[in-house]
Image 1 (spheres, rainbow, N blue to C red):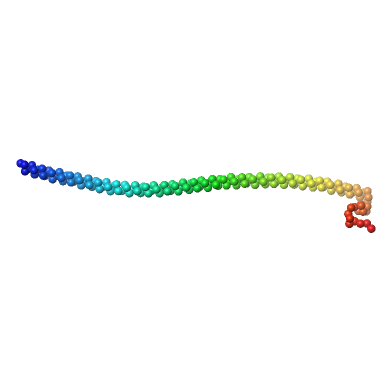
Image 2: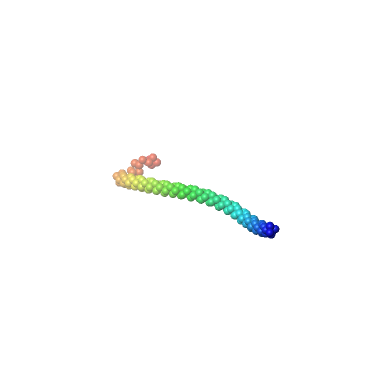
Length: 150
């Protein structure tokens, strides 16, 4: 009976070893699949990190462009204000020159009016002198050195 028991034990042990080997094969297969999946995940992670770096570079580049554009807009705004101030200064200067020109024109007109009054008085004096002295005496009494009487 012991021989049967040993055969039974050997057969059971053989079956148990086969079951364990099958289980070991399953575990090895699962481990291989896991390692493959892990490798694919690591590749995906590497790709994602590369994409993240590219996105970070793009973000940095865009921030630089936005900063540059902001500075350009600020410079343009300052130039616009400067141009506006210059235009205002020019317009003020034009107004001032127009005002000064108008004053000069008024002064000139006043001087011309005064000269017209003086000329009129002189003409009246000449007419009165001619009326009193006569035309020949008026010419003789003139202060013109070219007029000489022989």
